[in-house]
Image (tube, rainbow, N blue to C red; front, side, top):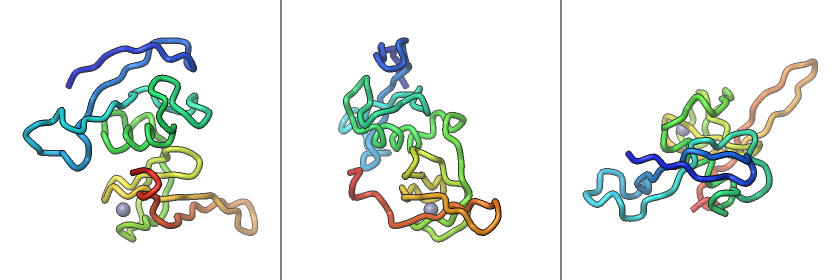
Length: 133
Ligand SMILES: [Zn+2]
C-alpha cells in the first residue's frame, strides 16, 4: 500500500493519505478500480462538515478510515448494541453521531443518553449506510 503526504489547511501540516480498494471491490483483481482516498490522520481535530484535504463529507472520511482498519488506535470506542449484527460490542466512533461496528461493518447512528444518576449509555439507532453511499 502506498502512502503519500498532503498538506491539510485545517491541521496546518502534512497528513498521511493512501488509497484503499472500495468495499465492493475488495478481493477484486483490479484494486485501482473504485479506489478510495483515506486520510490516516482523521480525528477529533477534523471539524466542520467537509474534509479540508479532499472536500468530502467529514463523516465519509471517518467511515473510510474505520473500514480500512489502518489506524484503529485513532478511533475511540463505545460499547453498544450494533444495529446490524445485534451483538453487544465496541463500536469505533467516527463522529458524534456515527459509529462503526468492527464485527459486521455496519455504520450505526449513536448517541449518549443520561440515565438517573451519573451513568451514560450509548444507544444505537438505525443503520446509516444509505446516507454514506
Ligand atoms: Zn455489527
